[in-house]
Image (cartoon, rainbow, N blue to C red; front, side):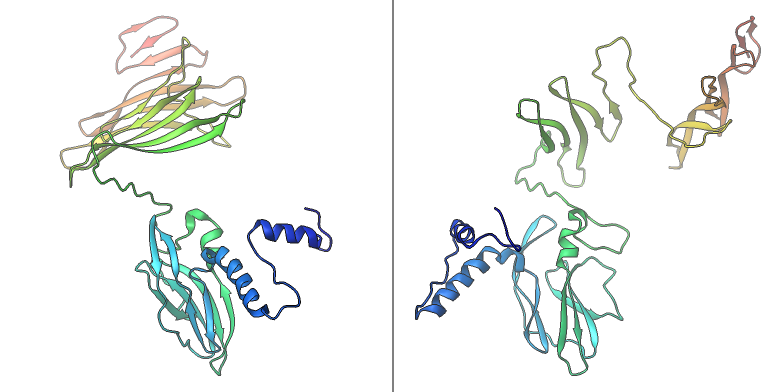
Length: 336
């Protein structure tokens, strides 16, 4: 609606308030207080959710936290206010919510906790114990980044956890995270899907698979599957050739003798991680239009990763293959 000086005309404001279910205080009546309280009730009841966990001052020298429902790690939790709190004089106090649904605080010299917490507010108190300022931190905590609504200084943190609360989980159950968009005819279309598929639901032996599906020619198609046993990359192309695994080494300044390595690793009988084989692409020339490289294959031999052979381009750009000892020779290929 059009505005002048930051506000619509009075008639538009009246229409807007009526559409929102907010009644005006009528003019020249003796029931002003009742109508004003009714107006205030309508406004506050519409925004009550925004007040939950906000810090306020019930007196000039104490603070408290407004109660209500909030969601913590996917669980609806209710905070019930306690007694008013008298903060430390002549200092700044930090106030936060703990994972156990309690309010804690400390002066700024102590600082915010290093354990999991949700920042609520900072308050300033003068030497007489009067609270002079309250800075609401909930906007920083909840709105700046949804994935970081829990502030964590430790090594790890749960961001946007999903709790699939099935009362009777079974093998082959799937927790799906779809991604939708519109197609050219404005039809809601599932373009991608991440799926967690349960393969074992027995206590202490649980297992699952991770699947990634994408829209291919109008059909949502599984292209990636990760299990405890293997990684599957599925190519649904119908042509005569396809890049099943495309690796791009995006180095800004490549130089001769750079190597792109693909290691194949496994455990030995001492539970050590061992590189049993390696495929290497070594850059021999990087000039535009004249690039070439050699491909090397290494394998573990008696505890040592050993080069077993390589295919390269010689000085005259003729392919050469080395494999230990000379077994044959012609003008194009040498076998060692």
